[in-house]
Image (cartoon, rainbow, N blue to C red):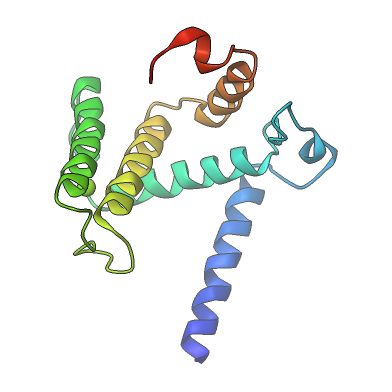
Length: 152
Ligand SMILES: [Mg+2]
């Protein structure tokens, strides 16, 4: 019990430190929301969460050796696409329990892989993914229903 409690405290301290080390604090900007009610700006919970994920995913990739050799951007995009293919394969087989993270389904695991790979790649290239996500979500609120007549 003590070990679990210390583990939870360590995770909370790490996440809090990560957000503060990147200059994010709760403030007036946190309360600014767009038409969908999504907090906007670099201090939004979406931006803070994405920046924390990008940093953590890239840090793990480097420690695990996945950044020891250069990859082409095409390789990086292909690796993201393979995770999407794995999600489809899991669905195709009835979405069984994940072998690696048994509390989750195969589709959940592969969706997580997609997000982790995108976040890691964005961090590696110093892309401002959090701002891009917020900008795109805001733009989407201005588009017509079904974005102008798309079928899917
Ligand atoms: Mg996978």
